[in-house]
Image (cartoon, rainbow, N blue to C red; front, side, top):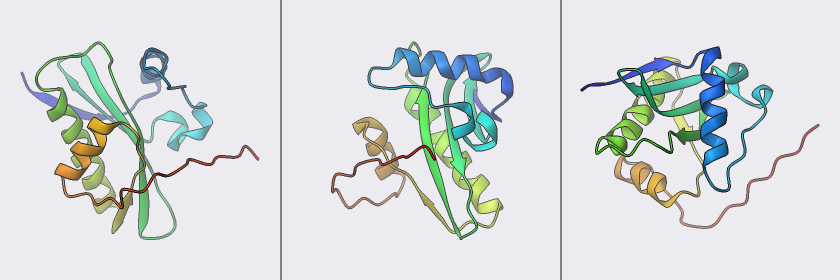
Length: 135
C-alpha cells in the first residue's frame, strides 16, 4: 500500500489531540499556538489510516520552522519510518516552493533526530531548552 500526504484539515484536530494525549511527556498545544490554527502542516496516511503529522511556521525571513511532528502511537507497521521521512520531505518541498532557504527544527526524540540526520540535517549536539511565554 502506498503512503500519501495531504494538508492538515480542521477535522484532524481530534486525531492530533488523541496522539498527544497517548504519548508520554507530550501535551497538545493550544490550537491558536499552531500555524493556521492547527491546519498549517501536513498529514501522512496509508489509505484512511493517519500515521504522522507536522507543522511549518513561516516567517518574514528566508527561514521557517518545522515543528511538533507527532505520530499515531498505535501505528507500528514497517513503513512508519518511511512515513516520517515522507512528511519531512513534503514539509521541506513546501517551504522551498514558498521561497524559504532554511528550515530549522528542535527535537528530543532520539529516533526522530536520527531520521533528520539521515536526511542531511545538521546538529550541534548541544542540549537546548525550549522557552515559551504566553503574552
